Image (cartoon, rainbow, N blue to C red):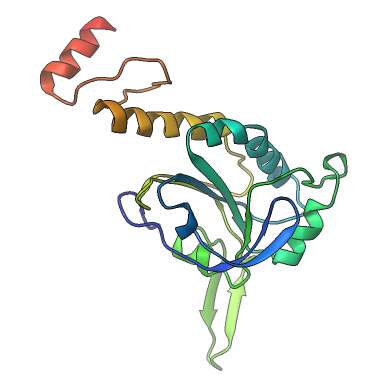
Length: 209
């Protein structure tokens, strides 16, 4: 698996659904330069774990925006599939009410470039492409900083939903480091002390805890 931390986030230009129902072409991350982006992948529309995650990110959307963070979702479904799912009520298994962008990675290049594409594919002896398993995205999450560099990544297998509070905690940790120059120890949360990344700084922190 590729480790993208410390590297520029792979760019893309694909169709997306924004504001809960408007389909746009050529959606890119470039429009968010100067902001942080939480880019997360999910396997399929009209499934079971996925809507719980999508709604969980929506419920905390204002908390992300207060931190200058844009939330963007991606799956390998089409933009028409995204749009249809967005029209379904939550109680019926839909995602009506989601307002952040949902990108259509129909040709699977975004998932491939972020190395979260599940399934195996190969060329047979007749030079036909064959696939084993669904070519869909794992539950990948990437925190991209204001300069377009990946600073955090997390990839879960298909059955394992993510913790949105943890995504916010990592944003807080990154911004704390940028603002104070201190690093964040284990289990750090906003409001906790950081530590100086020196021998003396670590020793002082450990002695006080």
